Amino acid sequence: MKDIKAISKHLEDSLGNSKSETNPEQEISYRQSPADQHFGDPDCPYCLGLGFVGHEVPIDHPDYGKLYICSCRLKRVQSDQQNALFEFSNLGSLRDLTFETFKPRGRVGLASQQAASLQQAYNSARHFADNCQGWLLLTGTYGSGKTHLAAAIANETLNRGVPTLFLTVPDLLDWLRFSFSSDSESSFESRFAEIRNVAVLILDDFGTQSSTAWAQEKLFQIINHRYISQLPTVITTNYRFNDFEGRIRSRLTDPEIVTRVDILAPDYRNPTDEVGHPELSTLNLHNKQQFDTFSLRANEPGMLAEDKASLKHALDIAQAYAKNPQGWLLFQGPYACGKTHLAAAIGNYQAALGAPPLFVGVPDLLDYLRAAFAPNSTQSLDKRFDEIRSTRLLILDDLDTQSATPWAREKIYQLFNYRYVAELPTVMTTSRQPSELDQRLFSRLSDTRLCQVVYMSAPAYTGKSTRKTHK
Image 1 (cartoon, rainbow, N blue to C red):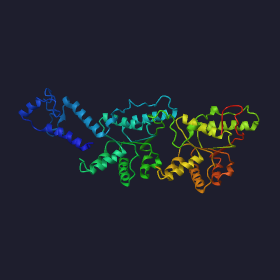
Image 2: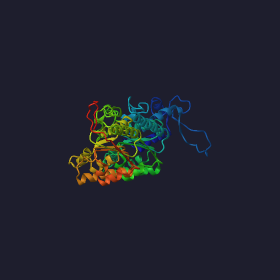
Image 3: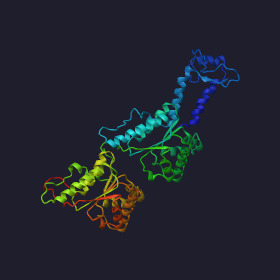
Image 4: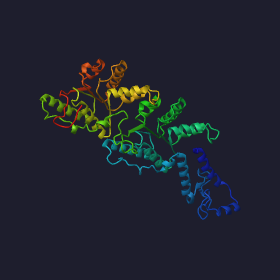
């Protein structure tokens, strides 16, 4: 990649060459080569082939002695400048990623919330490209459209002549490291200054870079400089905020400068994953457990009226919660009474809207955390635990069926306490009385301001009157 100073020097040299005096022989030679980019049309009545014109003004006029590009070569100069800007931008093969080739509503059949998040991201990207003010932060999973929109912004600003630099963060760091090489045409200082001060900077895949102290410090210096100077910046990431270095995170959460858009759409390149379930979630195994498949067991022999009423009451509460997940919801009752079915139905309802929750059995959750201690684990325990405790909607099945080891009890308590303080939406199922749970959990479940306990008194489902199954 050429640095922008070299490109600017080339353009200045083009201007400088045209200012030099020419003798007749040079003029003849030029007229025989009209394609020479440093000169104009030899038949131009204004510049007579020189490529520049001046104004006939008094000697004390500010424009006296200044040359201006003649109209006969203006388009060619603008084209050269445009090509230089594109070369500097590092867009490369992303030149075809434009707003025109982006589908603002995603694939046909995309859930409403997922499509709406894509539309919002598209509108925000358009607004940024038109105004080049503030920062735009696009978050989402791999293949959700973040890079396409970032490249579309770059293509749009470059077409308007705005110097724009598009870099994946790992490439940015490699570009800086290469400046220390003897083969580099520019110094580290000049490259670093270019990145910090370019009119529009687009950083793709933020968070995938090396986490060395040097890399973290350089990124912070770039972010901090552009933050203080309020220089237009676009950042895309699939990382969660808590994974960012604290100083960078604090700047990315400033609503006065940063517009954040969370893209909920799944991977466009993987159409089989239409929902985009979290990695740990087992909700896809419960895809048949919907509200319309939940049996109220009206014709089941031996069912008491109060048991049937408890099922209807639980169904009504679950449907209302699914439409607006707020606070905590605990389904309590005997095995196979329908607790897991309703919890999964809440999850499937949200997933259909494009906001799949994290649905997991408590024993599986603890196994997932324990796996972080394996020698080949790529994630730390802290990162896995934070992923679970801060998820938007958490559905915990079979609460208190887990191992009663002190470590397990402590992790469950830490999880509950975090979500209790943050008042994050949480759905739980248990076959035990709340008072039989860990007393620290019971104290939080007893807070009626936050938690609603729904008792389902129906006995275990036998399937005698219908084929639908419950847990």
